[in-house]
Image (cartoon, rainbow, N blue to C red):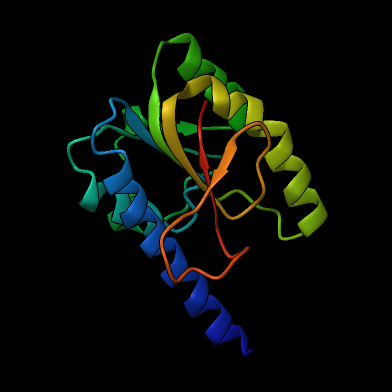
Amino acid sequence: MSRLDSMLRRLTAQRDGLNWAAEAISGLPGDVIDLGLGNGRTYDHLREGLSDRRIWVIDRVLQCHPSCVPPEENFLQGEAEPMLDRLASEGHKIALAHYDFGFGIKEKDVAEAAKLSPAIARVMVPSGIIISGQPLVGFEEIQGPEGIPEGRYMFYRAG
């Protein structure tokens, strides 16, 4: 498969997964969090589909497209673990989390996702949904929407 075809499959899976998750949390209280802003495409999609919820964003740097800059009060710049701990200590609860951190080195990405899993768990509402491109630990893995190839995206429910 070409890199272009692979990218298209990833983006389609991401969009379909986010749409599915937005519907799945419709009866749950809580905010949304985008873990890894990047260029802002996912954040832009989340704010369009979940405009009634507060959407937090965590990233090390703010370098997204100018049209996708989150409000200053919702952007937490820095390392993820202390930012998640801050949200938890302030009593914020998350109904939907999108995990998209990565260094581009599979072993390092998997280790980072495992390390951050407990901090993510501390902010999730019971039965909240986590979508991730990396395997997370300590959550119930669930079946996402039809049509997403196995292993392309992972879907979890918080305990």
